Length: 440
Image (cartoon, rainbow, N blue to C red; front, side, top):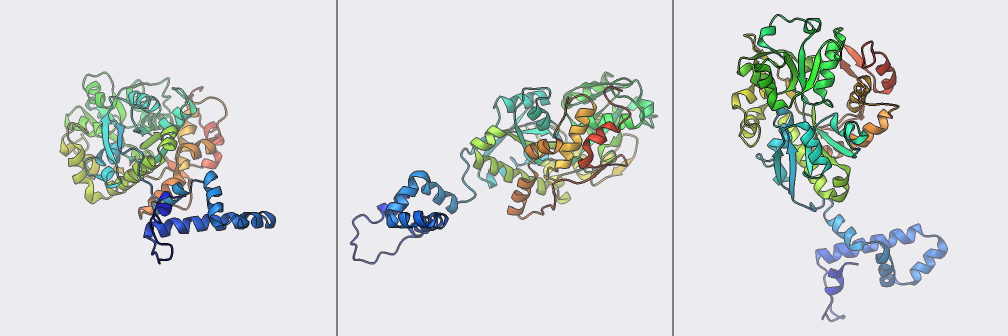
């Protein structure tokens, strides 16, 4: 029972009329509601016994097993104050992490009650290790990573929540300028490619594209992992013929006259997920209010970034050395979709990159089908259960509704990848339908 109410009657004449404060009235109302609920739930005999105790005794008895002071605090402030305001979010310096990064300089973390700082990592393995070892409170990850880490693919199994997608689209196949004559995937046989991580949309989309063109990604080409900031240097040095990588490094290759943009990833799968905001399950359950505050900040920032009119402001905000360390003109070309392709043309693709926080379960299921296809997952997989555990779609919609943003009617949908429809309810059949896979 709240100490505030009992203390308020000290040294007061019981015969005087006392008008309770708003806090006292709130506490009293909460206690009365709990008592009424207990009596209503009890059977007739128990109800008589409980009522016979008297109001004060009954409240004391209930208070021994039900923390009324905590209920009062929660009801008075249902959002809840963050258990820790000072948080660190790990990120990779790419435009895919725009909402996580811009939320610091543009004030979205502060808006939602946090003193957050973003911490730059050199590569995705470092981000994974930071998250698992609790060196950061939350992390920017590739959308396949929380699935892989939760399932123990390539790491010790650690339950990870993916509350929100950061960006959709926003990648490209970039080739060395000497390959201007390449027209199809078949022309790429013998190429050396790099991708930012094994468990990445970049890897799975590149493999999908090559295989659809009759090129076996494990036999006809070489694919190796290179951290995004090192991709342009490897292209310039001739170590690779191309990459399916994140921006700004596709546009940076054009800026430095070493490469050209062969194909935007949206041409493979329009509105595909790329990067995401993640926390460990342990952090989410240990610091639930802090977790929710970060979640609100990210959803808020992601919707802000989805407005094309904000893109130039965002480019300037994330360009500095401590964030992306890139020329503003490069970032503007990526974020606005008006860009030089490296072949002498200026293209206009407003949806070259976009931002939508909703983590569709069907996206997770597609990713896991590709993990199975290429041998990253072994044995049977309950696709739906894992998707629901890791991708927090329904909860993301609750956050969106609370902030006044649109919500969704379902958590899964069919997706079209290179003209072929993926049905998340037929995942096993989908995996078996490919002529080219890890064992073929």
